[in-house]
Amino acid sequence: MAVGKSAVGRNLAKRLQRRFVDLDQLIEKVEGRKVRDIFAAKGEAYFRQLEKQTLVQVLQQRGQVIATGGGVVMDDENLKLLREQTTLIRLTAAVETVLARAGNGHKRPLLQGADRRQRVEELIGQREGKYGQAHFTIDTTKLSLAQVVDEIVKRLSAQNDQHAKFDG
Image (cartoon, rainbow, N blue to C red; front, side, top):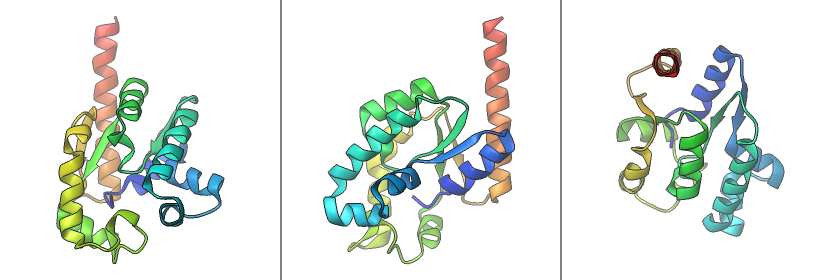
């Protein structure tokens, strides 16, 4: 949450000349309402089911950059699909940075009605085991958007060079 997934994804897609897909925006388009309104009306379980269905559909296409919601990897099947079919990149940021970027949190359903700092720390703790399965992690706390994209491109290039060495 608030680590820059959408902005980084959009800029990375442009840099790589690939299609950009924001999973939450796609869900909002199909449902005709914002994620926070889906949470309010139907609950998190309903949203997570939509998220899973949408992810499966999106992964049927290749050559794209996908920004997922932060909770998508909490589902083991989603995590497996992402690890097998994509290069899964984890973006992190310090709690203070997440709180500053999230603003008052009114657009973030998982921050509603709680001590925001405690809730962010809770979410990070709950998700750590799953997030740790990403192919690589970039801490966005002290990096500009351009620096994050540069770092991802550098790591993807290194990863591709490594595969080329093993693939002959």
